[in-house]
Image (cartoon, rainbow, N blue to C red):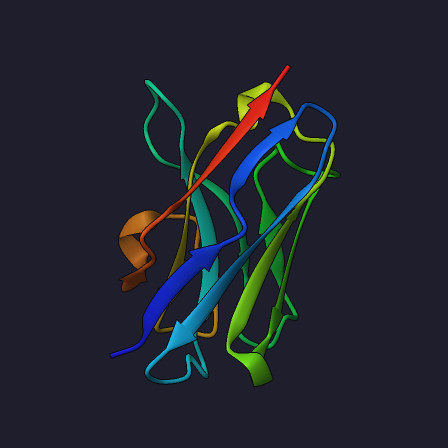
Length: 124
């Protein structure tokens, strides 16, 4: 099956930027909607952003609107999360996930495949 591998996490100062990548290996995820989720210390996992297979629809959590951008390059089997104006409260483990549907969803239970997670730490 398709495996998802996140990269691009790390430590950044408040106000800085990071770009996370989620690459599929083994097979393509043609026809899959993709989502990003995060889990901060002491909190449950939460939806961050999602994008449909065609890139025609995207969604963002209110906490990241205007700061984060989700995009995908289907030819490269890669999904990106561009994170700008990072805040300490963005600190979390970020997971990419794939859903066997062309329609993006906000619920973790709707996703079939998950990456290993990438740590993002924002200092102030």
